[in-house]
Image (cartoon, rainbow, N blue to C red; front, side):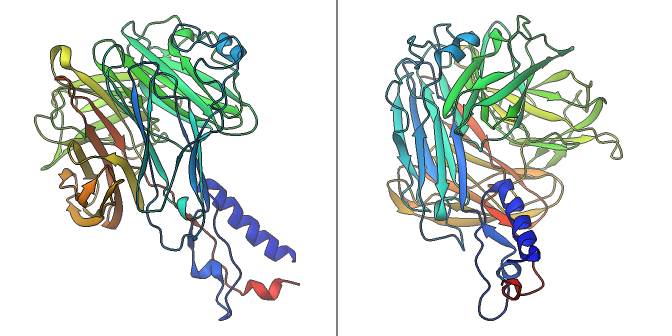
Length: 516
């Protein structure tokens, strides 16, 4: 094979590595190159990691795995979640985690996890049908998953945990994520009534080295052991924020950067009065951001933003409601100082209507990259519950959310810049039912709680897949509500593009003539 052939394949491989592995085959007999005939191909392999769900003995966790049916995907493959290896006792001691909530047994194993490493927890059966598995108590470890073949494109896994009482009570939900090298979490806290953990999960065969930086209202917080944290291979490490700094601040931005290797990262926020949920990473820093699907009955909404650069950011704050964009009274703009976390309480801004926050630069010619998230509170008095919505990437070609139930599922879709048409498909149920689809038109500048299609004959839970059909970019989120003893337990997951397809460079000539 000569250099021209090698260069082209190397370029295709580099692009495939961004989101997965592309399927490459030889040209067909008609003389048409496969690369030109299939500019986008399904990824062949993907990986996800799930954090350890809870430290509560009362925790009841459900894992749900789903792969949408993808045209052009292979016929073989599998999707599996396995428990990570036990973390080292030395690493736990170095991070101050022996606080009663993450104790080790002195033998380098997490209490209750001995002998569990590598055992299969959940395996996919067939694309188009979700599968679930339950776990109980505080001993469930972090999970590491891989999917290949027909199970890889769009593979989605969610971890949903119900805690009946105590710190962290309520409903907690988090999408298992692809490992990466950088994450931003505006909306964390080191306040006295919050117990926040940064969960680091390493899926690889070698150790990862991670730095954690914290930023408050006046800039970087002084940290003690936030640099050079080692995450052992195939393990999860929950890092308690209060062990990294002595400063108590209500609104903190967490920056996780990886020196070597890669990790999956999520923040678990436990509030003494407002319950708990997971804070997923914000979309990458950008001049404009969309935070989709704030529930219409939200009693309090807090916007937290941070700019990692050297310049201040001035943002317009708009709420995309069902009838169009409106400006929150008294909060038309937000000034974010460079390197400092800014927060604004929007109060009861929803007023009984679903909506999405849209942040854009006040000067269109001077956009400064920012990250953002909102904390949402529902309920009243001692029956309040909280959840977080980070800035999200658009749905793009396709996005999926799992663990939807016959009751308590709300899908919000927003088209902040231009009208758009989307197709929403409800999969077969995990225990039975027939898939169904509906198409919706979302007007420019609005957010709609769409009428979710429910599988006929539904048994168990189902997946919702949103596909862009035409028009401008759309953003979406799903709210899952599971009330318990008067507490409106809920969790919100955004639907960014699943990156199930990978672009392959087109070729203008038959590669077969280059082979020798």
